[in-house]
Every structure is written in C-alpha cells, then in structure tokens.
Image 1: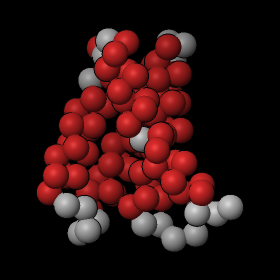
Image 2: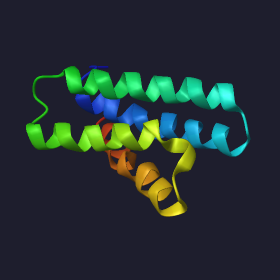
Image 3: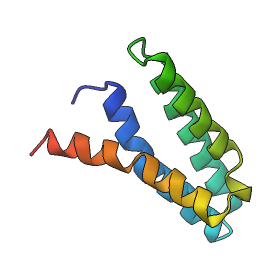
Length: 96
C-alpha cells in the first residue's frame, strides 16, 4: 500500500476516534498518547509538498482542535470526528 497523503489522512479517522473515546472514559495517558499520534500524522501530512496552501491552513486548524481536545464542546467534537471520515472511505474504495 502506497503511503501517500491520503493514506495518512485516512488513518486520522480511527485515531481521532480513539483519542475521544479514551478521553470520554477518563483514560488520560492513553488519550494523550493518541493525541501525540494524531499530531505526528498531521505533521507527516504537512511534510508532503503536494498539499496546497489552503489545505495546509485546514490541517493547521485541525491541529489546533487536537491540541485543545479536552475543552471541545459537542459541536466542535462532531466537526473533528467528521472532518477525516471521507478520507477513510476514499482510501477504502480504492482497494475494493
């Protein structure tokens, strides 16, 4: 499997789910570890030269959501959860 930006974008979807799930269950260390993995994935995405400037801005906004995950309101959480979902489905559709 080719590890291009889409691969990493798709992997954010389950990792963000884990982050929020750990947080909801009070598993602070596991949530912080998931947060670090999400931030590493975003940094990897931003390292690709084919990410356009507008896309870089979006990923920076997402990064700020992750950094403040502990204080997100329900609406902000929903945005965070839904943002990466389409990338996961797009990647999976390529391997049917």
